[in-house]
Amino acid sequence: MDEQRILTDHVLRMTDTLLRAGVKEAVISPGSRSTPLAYAFASSEKLQTYMQVDERSAAYFALGLAKASGRPVVLLCTSGTAASNYHPAITEAFYARIPLIVLTADRPHELRGVGAPQAIDQLNMYGKHVKFSVDLPLAEDNEELDRFLERHVNRAVSVAMTKPMGPIHLNIPLREPLLIDFDRKARASSFVKSIHGEIELSTIEKQALATLFSNAKSGMIIAGELPVGFDKDAFWEFARRLQWPVLCDPLSNLRAQVPEDCKALCIAHYDAILKSETFKATAMPDTVIRFGAQPVSKPLTLFLKKCRPEVFIALDESPEFRDSLGVVTHHLQSSPASVYEVPEQRKPTSYTDMWSSADQFAETETLRYEGLAGDEGVIAKTLFNMLPEGSDLISGSSMPIRDVDTFFCKTGKDITIFSNRGTNGIDGVVSTAFGIEAARKRPTYLLIGDLSFLHDVNGLIVSRFHKTNLTIVIVNNDGGGIFSYLPQSTVENHFEELFGTPTGLTFEHIGAMYDAQYAAISTVEEFQAELQKEKTKDVRIIEVFTSRPVNVKAHRAYWADVIKGLDGNE
Image (cartoon, rainbow, N blue to C red; front, side, top):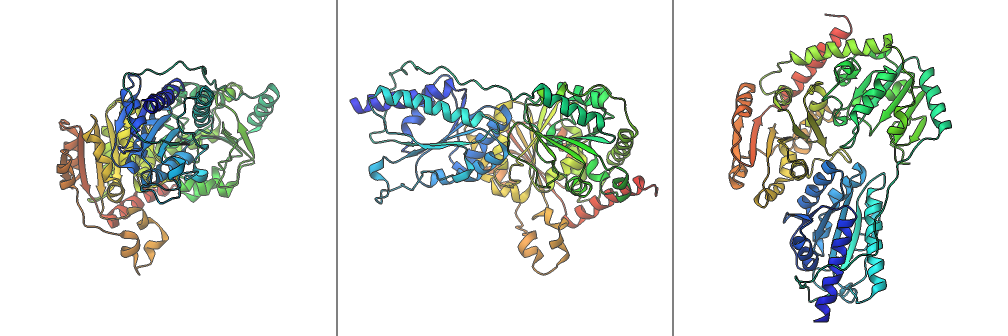
């Protein structure tokens, strides 16, 4: 049958081209129109395939795979609203710079706009949230089309991997019959490979940068979220040269595996320190260089906005400005490696010593912090202290990532932290965690709130198709804990109804439904004991019951102790 041969060659060529372009994983959701590609992917010995029946969760699972591996990951679904369910994760991938290769199967052109079932307008459906979008042609027995297909698919993956990385969309019309010939092999490709070079500074630009560094009297390095594979050794050698304090966002992963001689430079508790008005008045930098995205900490954001350093260098391999504060004076489009060699060796300064002393004091307060019964901070601190060597931590948005920022101290352990901070949403976090675990194959822990967990309960479905190793710590304060820290909490009218949003739900039955190891915890001692128990199932759920009012009280007491010490009132 010619139609079957033509269709088979078409999807095998697409599969082979994706493999040649560096794709190694594909996440598939079942559906009829995508059948030929699903068959081709599943039949490939070189492509690792994952199944997730919920497209929304599938997209976040793929996002986790791509985030943790740094490689492009394919998403495949059928036509219609299946493709619509990808949009939240695609939006996160766009702003977080994650290379997703989104393939949406579609009806052939004669079935579009005529009322055919499961047919919606899929052209450019993700708008400005993808870097590239194209409606591919139908399969034909045509060598010119074959060459076009090879180069267009390669171009799409290349665009996804070009900094700033991000998602791309290939809409793929497929005409029935949808079966392929499993005995056919992909024909040889005429395209070889796309090569990506590094962005380097010129000699003149390096000299100008060196002058900015040498003129600084109170310089500071800020490290926001950095990609997996970031060269930490080279970064710390750069910091040794400058001898400036390094404010390390938890997602920089510079708080872990800190070299012994750089521990004084590594500032982990700036979020608490910068709540002291006395300290802020003496800690204004005149020069800042920022690596990565803007950090999580709001006190740091307010501090920078107020002091507006004379020189603020944002190092970014993208021409896009990540400068929501309007403080950047020099946007440096370059690879980090091009900057590391620039500064000459400098001596430690009193400015650096001041930051180091404040951080040491705040760390002492953090280590002795015991919280209150019902407090989430002490649960987070306990989890971080008990994370094993060679493990990964995924943090939910809202309160979990803020507790990571507050209570994750610098350590010599090999621990990597992830979070979805492209758009700071609370959706898709469970699926992202499963994707990260699948990519890294390390013991993985997810710290998440009850509402965020409810947003992505379907993410657990993937555990029915693939082996996993994930411990989920659900902090259940029966609602949205972050709002208790915001101005809305000062207005009693409708607060619980609109912001607290208590559901009264617990998750023991969800654990049983997915055959997870489950425990309900109310105290720190119980939590410690549970973490020390053997993990006997692929998924372990530890539900910790906390109190929103107590949590706010305990956190504010901790910050007050830090402020008193820094202000000299102890």
